[in-house]
Length: 301
Image 1 (cartoon, rainbow, N blue to C red):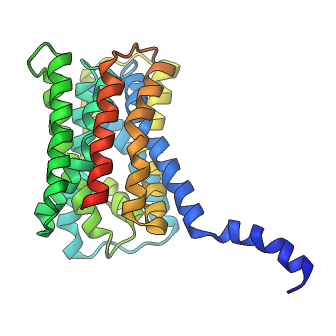
Image 2 (cartoon, rainbow, N blue to C red; image 1 turned 90 degrees about the horizontal axis):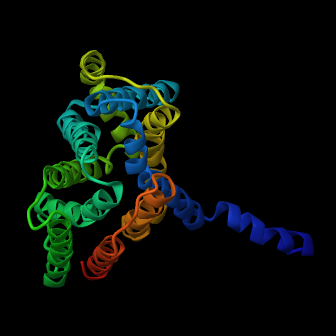
């Protein structure tokens, strides 16, 4: 090997290293997801909750449809359509709708801690769906994480669950179901196509919801409101999932899930920096507690 070739070899390896590339993509996805709640809070400054969710889905479906057309992706096979409907109901409709309704009464920092339980909820539903048998230590850690979140929500709401908490716990279940089914479909379809077709599948419902929402909910356009809508649609719903699935394909689901541990903490940072929220001492403590429980499940399952 010549001196010139040896000098350029490290650069070539760095560029073509799939682990580094996959890690960078997955991290970009985590950052995009961490901004979802602040973007939603901004969007609610201009739109009602039903209008915001419907418009977000319409814009994301338009972007996904353009990608699918540009890549000339064939229509999904019939055996995939029920699974895509589950993904659409959970990820495209259920989770955005329930979390948006929750954010009309809850702070983004509170929602970030509760929804930080999503990886554990997804793992539990996935085990039930696939018949897998995680270890006893996995379930102990998962239940501990759930206990931390429940104790946090009860402490924050004076000993009883609020309507916002009910929406957030419902969002956990429907999103976990959508993630589980999406993970199953991603074994035979590229992950970005799974979310792309789920968005397109919901387009007629999203268009109808947009018309109805805009007719009955007041609209007060602001810069924050428009920025929140655009990011929730293009950044969180499409770009975030696109780079997340690409990164996960490069480095694998276990390593990618480790990166997602930072998401609730990042959302807490955004809630202070972008929304000016004041964190209670319990919020970062509970988020760290959930993070530890998730880390344990990743090591013992």
